[in-house]
Image (cartoon, rainbow over the protein chains, first blue to last red):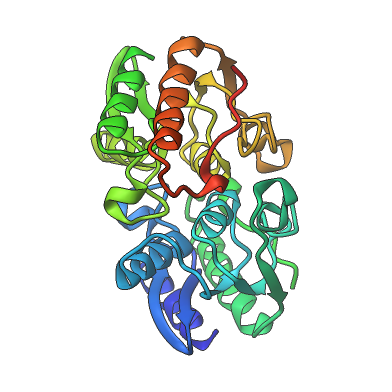
Length: 158
Length: 158
């Protein structure tokens, strides 16, 4: 999760919502990503999707079997869908997102029986740090009086 | 939908599950995509995601306001999530996917009140053709006795 947090830091430095993710297999990180939706002007450029794509490239196939994803904030529906498609084994979540999360909050896509792939979840790994960087980001935005799309702001649990 | 079907034909020609999508704004197609998960070895390379990314590039921003998506088969959770993130207005679906669809079948992500963005849906546009190309594809696969990941096969309604 330390590496996922480092990715979140990179997003923060770019003025992006600070969410980071890494994909790990056998103790080695095979994919990294941080949120780049504004920078790339791409609604799909979430940390998890970027990390999953990089991991698939590293392994040379789309099935990320026996891989784990570490992500600082609960994945949205898009990313949760990608986690299911890539056949990930387990995900470790820093902090939950009750407003838009799709791994237990609004939906639980990665543990839906009808999708035929079940992903294990562990929540709360470095929660303080993962939610802290988000809170700082949004606090600073508000202080600067920046225009912000409220719909994108997660409702952090901590 | 004719253009989305043409995209599905391209996927078919590549040996991919034949699903195609286009994004339209003011009567002009600004993004096209067809399923390329096997070819690109990328679990996120679904028709809709590729079309959405191309449309965002065309418009120079991630908000696809006043845009419509035409897709031959009901989007999965990942693609439905991307449709919400990109603020699409309406989607036209050829055929539903009761086994994995996330626009009314397994989930209805694009009309979930808690996500703060509501996308209109119209189902059944050229349904016969959209489901026909999928059925042909899977029938041919079975005849060839190819190994196939059954989890990826949609349960078409028609």
